[in-house]
Length: 556
Image 1 (cartoon, rainbow, N blue to C red):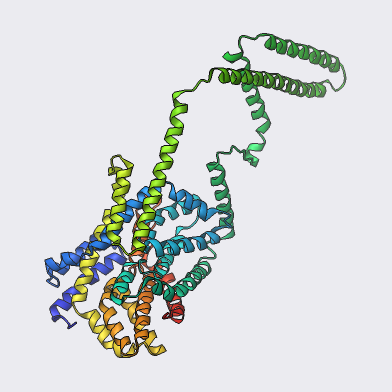
Image 2: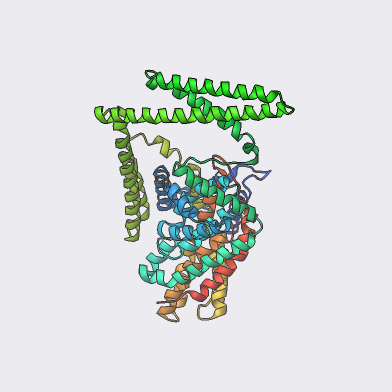
């Protein structure tokens, strides 16, 4: 692409610079308008400065990606209502050995789900859930959010449906699904392991041993709560009052049993109980009066008072419990003879089966969406169809569910598409490739390294999808001059590097932005994943994982 006129280049760079600054610093003192408004401002400036026409600006909005994002957001809402997050929580906490083990599990779950549902979908579904886990277990959210975003990007590189740029590469290169997966899968598996190891080393102190104890205790508490098991926890603060509280509870139970309407008709046992208690009191008083004549009358009296209270409690407990058991047997016999059933007993099983049927339908629709995507159907319309199917199956007003969709995120992507397309029309990215192409030949180690650096840079400046659209045909044509096998390998390298490049900075991937925006907008504990906190981890991690992956990519 030829460089645009100087005025357009300068104005386009200014508009893109404003967008980039606001995206990096959403609460900047001189322009604290946030990322969504910043992306719309950048798009508007591109049109006002005539870097891009109004019609081209509308055409630059990638509706399939927006449709895919909207559909998966709606599906994720219904999956949450269908308790998928609860089951996922059981998977993450099942025999968990602490926060470090939880971090590794998040890496694996995020990678696998992103390869099947796309990285954007994975981040939309899991971000709030991971925030809840971190808040519930009193853990810092940053390591787990970074694990989610980075593993989602790495895992999505393994399949053609893992992310939008892979879909573009699969269509343009005509590489089969199986060949694509076999070529990148080894790099993805090793990359996930290396990424988890880097996260553990980077946050080892933050994920301290005390936190591990808290995670294990919280996981056990959740399991007990879910199984409806009644347990008693004793602590030094409550153990000292246990005996007195137990005596009071016993007295209340006995009184309620004695005065229960179900046993008021039978006074014989109550009178027998009272007579036994009165005889016990007389005997104790006689012994107490005799003992008071001795030298240690006060001490003996105190001991006898304790004996008195113990005798009372045990006798009343035995008599009351036996009476309660007899009453229970009588009531059970009556129920067996008359077979009394209330309306609630009839409604509860029906409501339970209706709930189970609805949850099964939600999972089946989601599975059907996944299979349709694997078969190559349009991902955007497949996600929208699944969302509408769930709305119809729910058979109630969908407004509460639709209100949970992050429309500000959709607007952010609209503005970003226009801004990035305007920046590409300045010719700066194309000029950079024309300069680097002679040094980025794929038939040498140095050429592969240079190509990877160019892709890394452009993916973080102009986004990975525009980078693939800009460089794909040129990189493939350059590799085709060597051999057809090298052309296929060039496409796979482009898919791997452009995807993993998303981990370098916060703006490198849509998945990163989804995690960041949803974390900031969380209802209970908003968390700001800043640009520099992401860069400190992302920069070294991306370079290491990219280099390892380049050594493992094979052309089958």
